Amino acid sequence: RKEVEQDPGPFNVPEGATVAFNCTYSNSASQSFFWYRQDCRKEPKLLMSVYSSGNEDGRFTAQLNRASQYISLLIRDSKLSDSATYLCVANTGFQKLVFGTGTRLLVSP
Amino acid sequence: GAVVSQHPSRVICKSGTSVKIECRSLDFQATTMFWYRQFPKQSLMLMATSNEGSKATYEQGVEKDKFLINHASLTLSTLTVTSAHPEDSSFYICSAIPQGKGETQYFGPGTRLLVL
Image 1 (cartoon, rainbow over the protein chains, first blue to last red):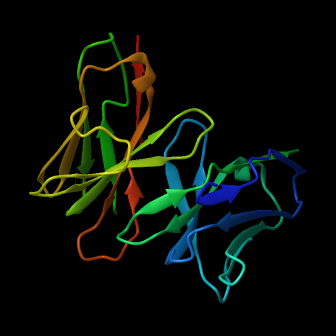
Image 2 (image 1 turned 30 degrees about the vertical axis):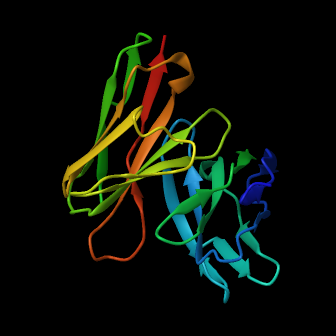
């Protein structure tokens, strides 16, 4: 079983739609969590950290459920520029990041 | 701030040759840098943790004699793929953590290696 699992997608949504991605992790000792965005053939870029209390950054909302070992990312009012692959990432300790395979989002006009 | 560069951005080499990839933190010092590899449609996989002034720590399954890592200064880590083979063709990405500033890793733009 992969340490971090995501639905690979693609999720095809129209502009303005709300879309949600889910992620599960297997290592209960994981200390912190992140969502990264990766554009085609580029390096990943940090989108936001994920906290149990939930956190919001503009159109993006992330949530962590430690009991279920479940992480989510909600994108509201999707833009064409949101098209990318979204990587769920767990810090399993000693600064070691474990990446999911990513969920691909395609936003169409 | 927190810019990481990699050189070269892409390289094509013949099977059996060695390739060196540089990772530089441009505006900060990094005691620790990381090397990842990403195959098409797969996730980034941590290969090794590069520590300034000491030996790198390799992940299980990564051959230390094949992937040589040198972290000679607080702003430079190098990865040398020795005797490269076609199966080593991949996207190699480094990251760095600014010294004394939490745990956020900043990623370089990656190096695309193609071994013929």
